[in-house]
Structures are given as C-alpha cells and as structure tokens.
Length: 158
Ligand code: 6U4
Ligand code: NA
Ligand code: NA
Image (cartoon, rainbow, N blue to C red):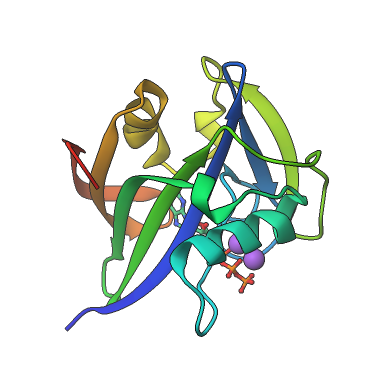
C-alpha cells in the first residue's frame, strides 16, 4: 500500500516570464521551483495553493484564477509514500514578489529556465507547461538526484 501525500505547486507567469523561487530550507532546499506545499486540515487544494503562494513570496492570487495544469506523482525507492503534486498556473495576481524565510523569488524568461538547479523531473515536464499543454507525469526516484524511470503524457482535460 502506498501512502499518499498531496502538495500544491504554483507557477505565476507574465510577459513570457515565469516566477520561480529559490527554496531556502526544507525539502528541495537550494533548488528553483514554483511555490507550494502541503494541505492544511479542512483546506481545499486551491486554498492551499493560494495560501502557500502568499506565505512564500507575498503574492496574492484568487482561488478562481488558479488553473490546474498538471498532475505529478513521485515515488522513491524503498519508500512507501507517494508525493502527489497538483500543479497550478495563473497570469493574474496581485502584489510584488518578496523574499521570505522560505523562498527567494525571481522572474525567469521562459526560454532560460535554470534546469541545472531544479528537480531533475522539471526539465521533462516544463516543456508541456510552457506550451500550455495539460500533463500527467510519474517519476520513480532512486535518490533525490536520480530518476530510475518515468512516464509522461499530455492530457486532454484535467
Ligand atoms: P513546511 O513543512 O511548511 O516547510 P510545506 O511548505 O508545507 O513544508 P514543502 O515546501 O515541503 O511543503 O513542499 C514541497 C514542495 O516541493 C511542493 O510545492 C511540491 C514541490 N515538489 C516536491 N517534489 C518535487 C519534484 N520532484 N519536482 C518539483 N516539485 C516538487 O518540481
Ligand atoms: Na513549501
Ligand atoms: Na510552506
């Protein structure tokens, strides 16, 4: 039996740029990524996504403006937990990204994503996101740096 934990991951974009944050602590430290985290009790997935974005870089997005654009599943060799990551995108937001204790935000041109300093799976599924295609991917890791096998596909709807 796999134990499933659900996470959010939010990408804000504007003018061919995407907002990433350098994670300053915890899981994925020193990697660039979108903003997100675990759900709190009694929270919907979009509420969690919006809350994490605000906590991590001080940007506000309406839950109704968050589009579910991808679904990722991660497993690790010898670990019974599956991380399920719900990916959201929005072009609508309020505020200016600010550094917090968890993240250092920075805008990146969509054709210059820092894949060498990101999760190894990102270079596999980002192209779908950047083309506006919905996607499902699952990745089985040997350790935090090594993908043993994966599957990725475009979805017609989420
Ligand atoms: P706390 O306990 O508050 O520090 P919390 O913010 O709830 O943690 P966190 O930061 O551990 O959760 O969540 C992990 C984040 O990393 C989520 O947004 C999902 C994302 N993530 C995890 N594995 C990933 C992977 N392989 N590729 C990727 N994002 C991943 O692109
Ligand atoms: Na987080
Ligand atoms: Na968090």
